[in-house]
Length: 124
Image (cartoon, rainbow, N blue to C red):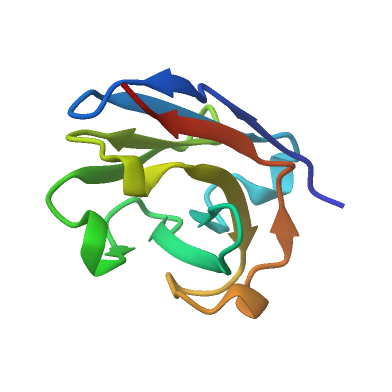
């Protein structure tokens, strides 16, 4: 079992920025797993946000966050980051970190491991 530990969620005003992090605690995931984020807003389905492959060079984003969100990873630290800029109230959701042996994909079933989620609230 791979444990994913998320951090960095919180309350931010519209137009503001926030960075959330996800660390995989198992050494065997280092440099081997794609990592990413899904999010779920109240009353809505869980949606793909972004993913990055093991090398850090290949990424994928949902259209609504392109140009505003950036996913990166620090391989030695086994940590993925999601930098979120120009946030809107539509970005309010619980953000879930994921990891898996897949290439970056928006298909939730392709990811083997899920974090507990971190709340991001965008409100004035």
